[in-house]
Length: 174
Image (cartoon, rainbow, N blue to C red; front, side):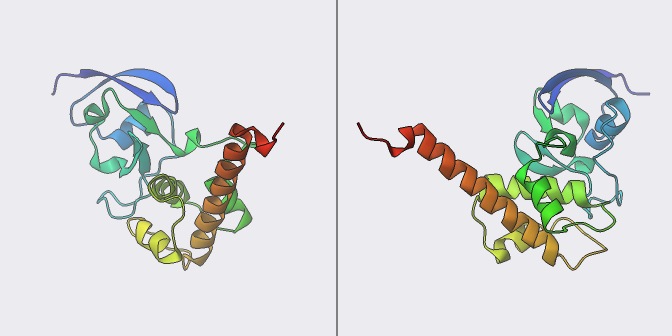
């Protein structure tokens, strides 16, 4: 049996210390050690993307990362995106544009979309489809998922534009 290692990770803005076996996957640390079951295990082969989280701001399949590799890093799971009454624009997009059916892949798709929009705040439809290639949805034809990501991009860009106007003094001249 392997000797356990102490790791420190910041999950959804909260610092956590865990004692884990060196071979423990990040997905299992999140689900089994921290109780964050929004990160789904779909295929056990790193093909489906249901386990996608943000690690250090990058979308990664958490079934391909050892928990010890996340030591000292920030992790955002779907639970860290938003709350009822204050949804993240990606969550809002999935709600408004019916971007889910059974919902099993949805957390991974959302986290992949957040990562995509952080890298490319104004993606074309083709870029969205390319960006979501690592996540498999067996229920949809992806059209509503693409619409949801487009909706989120529009909302995020509008919010950024409004913040820029507010920061510049609303354009008022005296």
